[in-house]
Length: 398
Image (cartoon, rainbow, N blue to C red; front, side):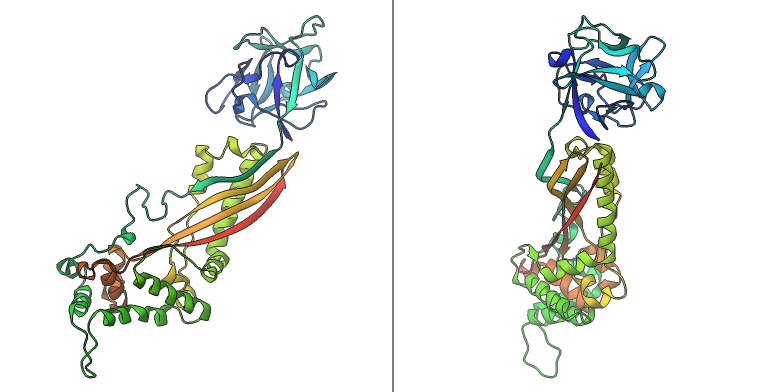
């Protein structure tokens, strides 16, 4: 199928138009109207031959129809009166003949915007039955962001700073109210460094060492991810808060079954809508129904038994959100292809919920939380956003 624009009076009039301002859900009148470029004036047709249906891009379940009670033209669901024959008059101008009653032709009742369209007997002396049918140009899109989860990098769904991106915001008494282990770690941080070989280490470095033990606890079975985990904790300690990217982390996240499940579901949704809208992505990517289907796909999370030892859980755990950008999309004739660029993002930091669970009694996690949130650390250690970006190619036929 291809998408066409149909203009009355041999191309000298106005576009054939569905008379509506919303998505079609029932029998709807057809008229001619000033050019708006909307889907109400775009028509999907398999070929300009015989026994064809002319579907509106507003909702491709509806097509040109003859309402036999008064021979008005409307759009309706498929039936014997939705098939037409295109009779060429040359120069892309056609008569549109009703297949179920070949004495009836699509006719504009006037030339002004809003003039009705009906089915009438052939009138050779009028241009009102001549329609110029132009195929809309092939669609090429180089870069178009088509989806973003409700959460965005560093932000919650309501636009506020994500809880695990906050830092330098807790006193020792507030830490104690969350967990006595947090308060103990804060006390260790406040102590001067000790060179004693008998007493436990104390001071800031001791708390950092406690936190770094998380690497040997949760990133041991994949040597490459062990290196990544160390690098991420060191990036937290360097205090720049700058974004983090690592090719190994990206590859492991991309190949995970939960990520592949998300990619498959979102790609299938996108392809479904591309077919439904005859390749015109611009017509649907902001559509509420399309966006809802994508939002309903869960974010990837990494919490299998293997993830608890290979580094993915400690480095990411659950992806905070992601976006999808369409690149190099081309729709030519009945085929389409392109690239979906996925950008997964997560926050390397802890929030209150993390330590109110079991982690609040684990010294290593408590050390991490204290370094991030304890006011005596003076904001020296900052959470950061990690990105995992990758491309997925796709193609298909309308």
